[in-house]
Length: 178
Image (cartoon, rainbow, N blue to C red; front, side, top):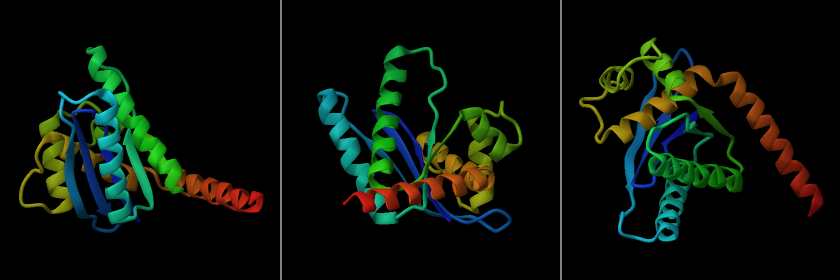
C-alpha cells in the first residue's frame, strides 16, 4: 500500500509518501514541504498549495491519503490556515477518487511511539528508526507527514478497506449516471 501523509499548513505543508503494509518493513518513497509565501493573497496561496499537492498525487499515485485532523490550536490564524490546507487536501483526494483518512495528532504519536503524549523529538526519532533513515527529515512538518503515513499503514487497515469499497462504489455509480 502506498500512503501519502499530509501535515496540513498554509505556510508549510508537510508531505510524506510511504510504501508498506502491516507486519512488513516500511520504506520512504518521497518527502518534502510545500511552502507558500506569506505575502501572497490567501487565494493565491491556496491555489499554489492545490497545484503542488496535485503534483504529488500525480507523481506518486497513492492508494490512500492520510491527513492530520485539525484538533485544537491556540492561535486562530494558525488553525484557520491548517483547516484551509486540510480542505484542499480533502478536495484533491475526492476529485482523484482516492480514499482519505484523518488521524489526530495523539493517534499518530501513539501509533509511532507507543505514547499519545510523545513530543516532536520522540516522534522524529521513531520515524527515522521505523523507516531506516540516516537523519531526521527537516523541517518537522515533513517528519510529521511521514508519521501520519506510518500511522495510517499500521492503524488504518480496516478503515482503508471500508473507504476503498465506498470509493469504488461511488465511482461505479458515477459511471452508471453517465
